[in-house]
Length: 332
Image 1 (spheres, rainbow, N blue to C red):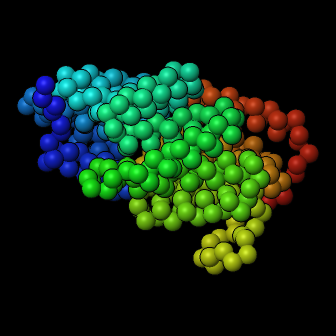
Image 2 (image 1 turned 180 degrees about the vertical axis):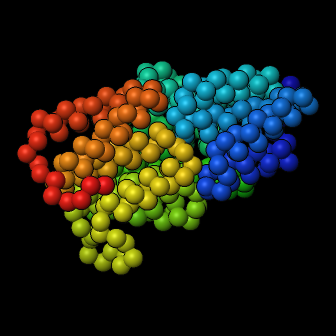
Image 3 (image 1 turned 90 degrees about the vertical axis):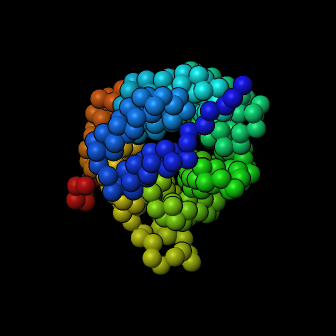
């Protein structure tokens, strides 16, 4: 049975559109228009694998905008197309992406089922790339559920798998570099929870260095947000820190928010506002924190990110119940 893959030329074209969008050089609407034109081209050819590839990437783009129903529809179409192309590894990747969409919607049970199905399937076909992403995404669910010890175990597994990803192919090398930037950013947050602040600092620095090397706004956003959270926990820069680092967590949260806003990744922008609010609260700036929380909660609710909206609402209730923390600094 022949397995159909996206053609190199077509894949390079769709990847170029997404790279230009991720770097902030191409507005979302223009990028989406180009992707829809490429989808029509693949459909008219017809070429199932090319069409599936562009559907996947449109799903990823919509996912970062937190247009989750649209994202799910793209991934479902892509899975069907890859199955018709007899391409099981890419169909498994679609299951992985569907799980991520359900995670963002707050449906953790369904998301974990999909991540585990993707992990087992990827192990059967020998896809280290998909195993790595599945393990990392499950770790993020565990973190959302406050299962920190299990999240740490899953992150360690994901990091070990990421180091095994081959660099022989461009696509695999890309996954490897992205995962090795994303995973330590989340490991830093877990280390903060366990009050292992020296380790958290090392993770945060590693994530920031790798994200700046990749030079993609999505990864810079995640790394700088984590850096702000770690710096908040530390209270100041550690001795011997790079003198180019700012000692003000607000600088990193602002950089993260700007990165996400430039590519209109609304869900991640709202998560950055939420993390910034908790940082401001920890530093005694309750009124500024309350404003950030309100902004985040409105966006989460609009986007249907129910778990994040509920967490923001609980944090706001807690803040209102402890109104004694005066805000003596300028608003954000």
